[in-house]
Length: 353
Image (cartoon, rainbow, N blue to C red; front, side):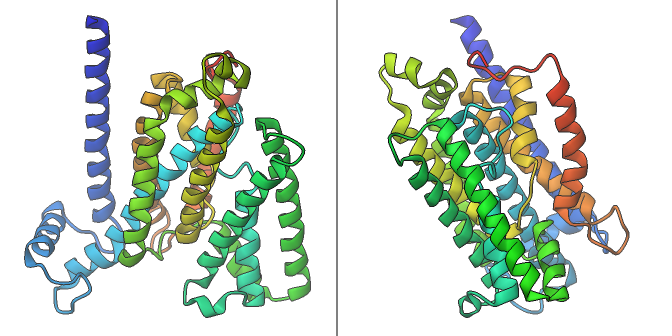
């Protein structure tokens, strides 16, 4: 009993420390850039806006206010949301397919998003949807692939983790082929350059009206997966073991995949394709707190948010007066980390894997 209480207190302290670190990372990232801001200026701009009750976009509120509230804070909030969402999706995907190498894009979601973006940029598909039609087309592509993977994996009997993986790989190859086909015949150098930049990921297009939609979805989804820790733990043990314990994982697997696809779809819509976050963060956190998803889900969400906020800040200062694509920086950090984790002898996936 005492050991359980001590573990619970330690875990609560860990979550509190991570929340403080996230706030500190946000203030640090707000202060850096082409124009350096002091913490006093940032604090004053935030308090002034909260107390004034005026619209954020209202004119005449000063350059510091505009830098904080219109340029930097929206992208940092988006970075935190995308980081938390992708990290938790990585945790869930690894449990769904029982594979520690799984990430949010493993079932072909990124290929579907890329196909949607390619068709939008080079063929003008969805131009009537508004200025962010590329992101909307990518979102539709990601969700369409997710539904197609579910449909194919259920053909000829109940879906399984192996069938989900195979369906995802097959559809990913098809989407990549169609994307290459469009690029080849479009012969548009500017469009190809735009696609390449979009695939590297960027948070520069963050807007408060979009965050008002994305934030509730990501936060509620993370909380939902936190409540599902018992089922996620059972997924690591396999379907046969779960059935003997009175739980059929089939419907849970379908529901989790749909919710994960929704998060990934909105992440792709708002920031492009950002890899490695949903792969590396769950690995590292699992090594620290163990395979129990009751601890793994919230810690992964907070660490993912901190990681992406810090990376966004670094992207703006590594090369003076130039913003490095965030997907490029994360790949440079994530690939060596992944290789190290892959060859590490101390790493365990849980569930006897």
